Image 1 (tube, helix red, strand yellow):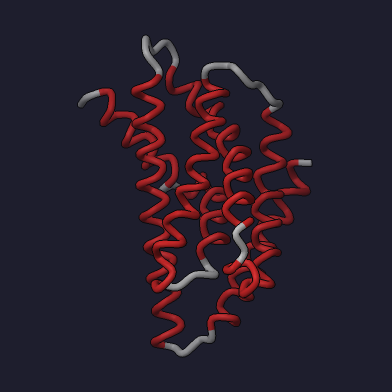
Image 2: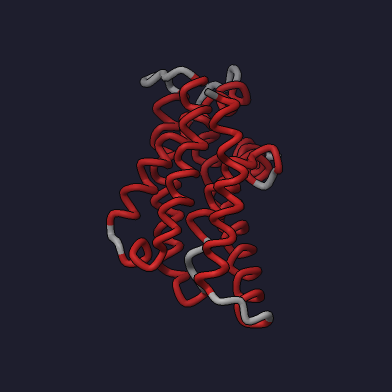
Length: 188
């Protein structure tokens, strides 16, 4: 298996994993307010997140920025909490252009969280550009799989069981808030 394939699979496995619960909750929080008709907007939103975390992932991996892992591990659930709380006013959030900037900024924080993991994987790799790129592609593919599952389940609930979108968003966001508050307190 080539180096590219190896790191692509590592990126996929890293995101499609229950140990990445905080990342999964963040993707759920940014996705649950959208439906299949918003697929293009959601694709750009998830890509904005990827852009943010790719940038800090690269900068942290090549040691241009260093921030305490403890702070990053505390900030990550804070980004999830803020996102889930903004969902409580989801109609306004869907229309707001600043959402892309917020998600990109939160991606910067999540990228710093990934950097420790990736640095341990890279070890003594001669070149890091290829592995970094492959890892990011794997993460993006994994995120798109998660988005597709969330949209599919949401659509199923709303159309088959006739759950109103507002109810769906409020329940999912409430669950996320309930799961992330203990994370914040534990990591403080």
